[in-house]
Every structure is written in structure tokens, then in C-alpha cells.
Image (cartoon, rainbow, N blue to C red; front, side, top):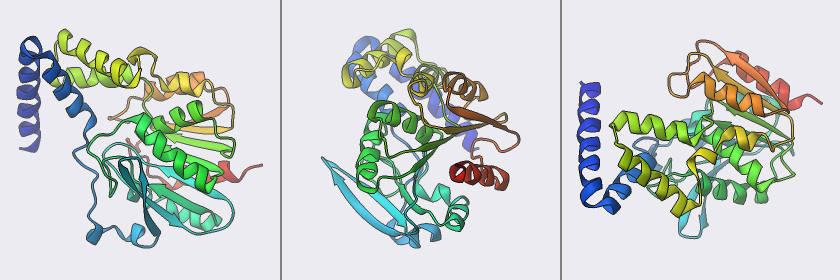
Amino acid sequence: MQKVLTYIFTRVLGSYINTISYINPNKAQRLAYKFFSEPREGRLAKDKLPAILEEADAEMITHNECIFQLYTWEGNDKRILLVHGWESNASRWEDFIPYLKKEGYTIIALDAPAHGLSSGREFNIPRYAAFIDIVVKRFQPNFMVGHSLGGATSLYYQSHYKNSCIKKMVVLGAPSDLSVLLSNYKKLLRLNANVAKLLNKYFLDTFNIKSEEFSGSLFASTIKIPALLAHDKDDEVVSYTEGQKIAKAWNSATFVTTNGLGHSMHDDVLYTTICNFLKAK
């Protein structure tokens, strides 16, 4: 029933946006971007936090008009930053954190804009990267691990901010091209060419981003530090070919293909592989 309701909603919404794009293009543009950028899942309630987050030292950090949630599990002087993806939150690392604790790392995780306990309704990579930069400057992490859009944001961050304290990166199940994300979104809502142009114009006017040039593979090509890139062949959310694009461009990355893990990529073998990569000389 939920799939049927979702199908009906997307078709009705898409038809509405298509229609008003000829009557009121500004409104159509705002609506198209709104439903592209506003997550519908991933929020948390302060009084119902997952147990793994209750174990951490938690604090709220203010940045301009935004407030974001930060969690720290204290360990040794080796620090690792965990960056979650779309419609998720810091608790997505629950299965991975025990492996990092075993290695003794100090673990830092944050809730992205409009996720977990962080403020806002809109998610975008440049804003997420600005949050990450505050955390990186404060904690000087040695390692960064990102999943899905968190992985894409990690690529964007290190490509644009080039922070020298980060010595190794791990990117899991990340999309590469904004143009592909937009294409999938347009297909889902069956948006017409007029709305497509309005969306591209919004990214250009608001973020100075040309969708065809906003690419994880392009970002990765500028990163020189050692990296582990992993993608699952059975990923139904982000195509395996997206991971291949990034791997082809990222000369300093080792590409690991997994099977049967889907998009979440929770796996004992993979987590052990990541830990071995991080501690290797």
C-alpha cells in the first residue's frame, strides 16, 4: 500500500510542478528544488536517541543561522570523523563503531543539515561541507569515512578545503554525478524539460554550480591522500557504475567491490578491511 501511495504522490506532484512551470516558473522552481533537497526521514528525538548515541558526549554547535549535533566517543590521539548520508543520522554507524573502539580511536560523528538533531529543512553538499570544516578544524581528525551522500560530501570537502590533517579517506556507496541524481529525480516525478531547465538554473544561481560539472569523480581526481573506495554490485539506491566512475578518477584509491550488501554496506568483513587500511603504515 505504501508503494502505491508513493507512486500516486510522485505522479500527482510531478504533474502539478509541470503544469505551473508555464504559469508560475518561480514557484515551480522552488517546489522542484524543495522536494529534491528536503529529507523525509532521518530525524531523531532528543528523548528517544539510539543507545549508541546515548553513549557519546553530545553537543550542539552553532554556525551562522544553523545548529548541528555532534557526538564524540573518546579514545586515543588518533581521531576519525564519520559522515553519514541522505535520510540518515549519526546512529547509522552503530555497527561500525565497535570496530573503531577496538582500535582505540577517538570517534567523531555529526548529524547533517536537516537530519538527526541538526536544524534546518534543506540538505545540500556545500552546507554539509561547511559543517564538516568546523569539526575538522576543531578536532583535526586523521581519517574521514563517508557513506552515500556523506561520501560524496567528503569528496567535495577534501577537494575544496584540502585539509592537511586528514591522512586517509574511506568512501562507501557514494554517488558521483549531480546530473545523474537530477536525472533520476526527474524520471521519478516525470518532470518535463522546462522544469529540468529551472532546476539547473536554481543550482547555478544559488550555488554557482553547473550540474554537469558537479561530480564526485572530478573531486576525487584532485585528492592525493590514500583512500579506500567501496561499492556494492547490488546497490539499488546508488548504481555501482557511480562507484566505478569515482574509482577511475581517483588514482590514490583502492577500489573494493562487495556483493549482497546493498546500499547500507554493513558487513564484518568490510569493517575489518577498513580498519586494516586505516592502521596500515
